[in-house]
Image (cartoon, rainbow, N blue to C red):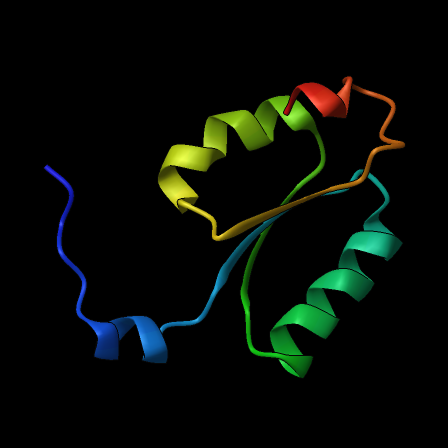
Length: 77
């Protein structure tokens, strides 16, 4: 059963982002912009397999994937 969320809770909750990027500098910049600039809650991982494992726990509103990551075929994520 899916828990019901009221409109007020939705309006006041921070959007959740799951960021998949192996380059620490790129990930740090994106994370800073999303958290500080537009107040998103960001979870970062370096590879697609970890992202797949985290989806249920994080329940992201959006998934940002660096498509040039070398560890996995990130189109599969």
